[in-house]
Amino acid sequence: MPIPPGPTTGSEALPGKQRSILLDPAFLRLWSGATASGLATWALPFVLGLAVLDRTLTATDLGLLLAARTVGFLAAVPVAGVLADRHSRRGVVLWAGLAAGVAAPLIAAGLGRSVLLMAVAAAVAGAGQGACRPAFQALTAEVVDAEHRQQTNAAMTLAVRVNTLVGPSLAALLAVFLDTRALLLGIGLLWLVAALVPGTGTRADTGAKDAPAGERPGRVAFFTEFADGIREARRHPWFLAGLGALTAVIATGYSATGVALPLVSRDEYGTEVVLAGAMTAYTAGALGAALLIARWRPRSAGWTALAGLAAYGFAPLSLMFPVHPVVVMSAYAVAGIGIELFNVPWFTATQREVAPDKLARVSSLDFLLSYGLAPVGLVLIAPAIEAFGTQTVLAVCALTCFAAPAVAALVPSARHFSRRPAGSPRAERKTESAT
Image 1: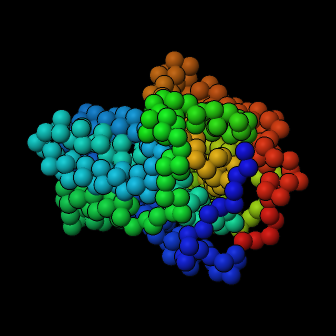
Image 2: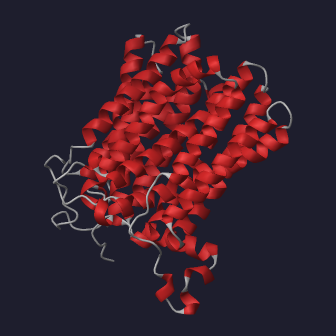
Image 3: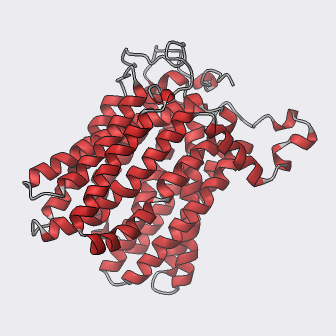
């Protein structure tokens, strides 16, 4: 079905290229809210880890809380996708942020008193985090016009990487002056920012008021509506292929980073410097790539993105052999560059190609599979290393990271992340720099 041009935001919209997206109040509100939600999402496990260090929480309890958060996240993502397509995306962001904001002080209240209360609150926090993901993706398509979405997505991911880079130092510094409960209350305040700051897009509702009574979204079963999102995803072969490749890379490459990298750093190099250096190099590479892709418009955007995704294979590959630590760090820098060369065009193409009234559901399918299977990989990789050896498992991870995007690239529509012919106006990628 034809996809209408990206909506503007009334008086706040940018007139074409006359002003930078960075000066647009609607973008700044959206970016601030998304950044606050990302920082709060990252901060919760880190702050709970600090609670383990000061012995107010045991390692077993930490694992239980993180598991509860993951369950809440995975349960909320598909529900939020349906609700964000059925109702206001802004409303879903609001209620998701408020839920996570209320959960943070409840976790603080249970600290040292009730693990059950903390686990329930952690599940609610995870649900808020999961509900925000597809809602923010769909809200971006409402608030920002099509011409500026790639810049916007690059700015969003840039904020995530900055949080990852400076967040640990900032949290450790705050921990000198504040206790864990105060830090948890700070996380709650971040969620209030995420809930209240973003503005409303042009799509106030889904048009349900004009539909016949028997066809209104409110009368349709949840699974029926989610199935509609799956059918919409199946209309885009490039999306299914890319999602399969992304899921495979996250389940293997990310697992190698989470489990094998610390082991190799300890056993092969005898120092944590390799672990810290590799993760810093990865984040630095991602930051540089986010700045690059904000302005670069490759002609074959899909192939470029998939090549970037495949670059993650260099990370597990570098851990297979006794190489200099600089080689490992360089490999992780390349992986960081590649993952952002994939992420930004991927999000932008989804916002451009998917039917607007099904965008949140398709985005929820994206997060559900790619992030949902990541814990499975983390759980399985350690037993696999014990059974088959580190080198064998790393070889499988590297091969999967290289092969999965290559197979996805064989799908004809994957070249441009579009079902439309390459020469059509909407499929043709602009090569000039954005303002």
